[in-house]
Length: 114
Image 1 (cartoon, rainbow, N blue to C red):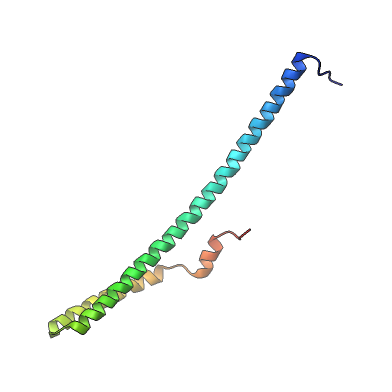
Image 2 (spheres, rainbow, N blue to C red; image 1 turned 30 degrees about the vertical axis):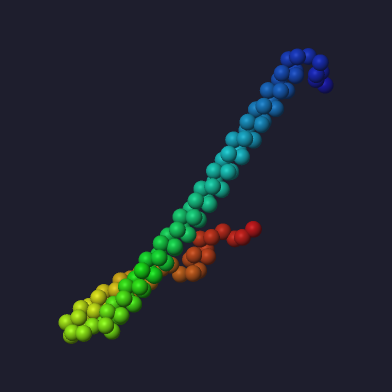
């Protein structure tokens, strides 16, 4: 059995405890960084979804505006211009809708709730 009445043994034990604590701190830091990185990735995916929704809303508003311009047109040339705008806005919105990921792929990207 080791005697703890000697100063060398006490210093060695204190050093060993310090090393164990520092190893624990490094492990905790690594696990925390991994969790923060995962949370940042989820936030980035959510931001991309929000950006897509905002762009889709903008495109929908462009379609509504083009339809309104057609209704308010007084000359055939204005109607033709409105139809051109409506077709381009509809095509743009359709391209945005085709780029939206499916709901199942979004669910698989999020971890299960705890």
